[in-house]
Image 1 (cartoon, rainbow, N blue to C red):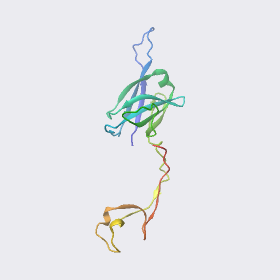
Image 2 (cartoon, rainbow, N blue to C red; image 1 turned 120 degrees about the horizontal axis):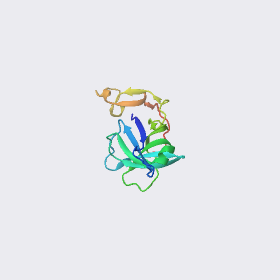
Image 3 (cartoon, helix red, strand yellow; image 1 turned 135 degrees about the horizontal axis):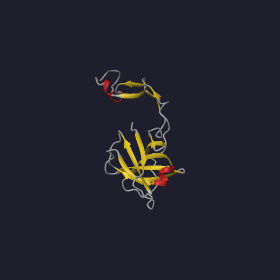
Length: 167
């Protein structure tokens, strides 16, 4: 599971005539995997209930800092990380959201909770290979198959998962 920590910062060298309009958004994640050439990650901050993209990235070396509109960053309530096609004409985040977390001050801890609540997932399993079994005999490789179900003739499905959101 990936965990993240986000911070915002403004430069200290602003003078009375120059006001910084951007701030750094630092993303520091552990366990995020490279997506290959066809997909990228997109980080969005949620401002007034709407997503505001802070851009895409493919490198999984962290921490990384990105410049974001200061007013929007200060008003952000949530950070969401999604997986997008490398060439993406849709400005909205894809349904493949993988991490999210609410800001608390200038930091947000993210988790995979938006993917689904698996706390009620249940099932039974047995270890054997019924698809290549002949008759009632043992073909010698029953230790090679994990089936979620109740053994019997025929085996019956027995695996309960939550209904997952789109994506």
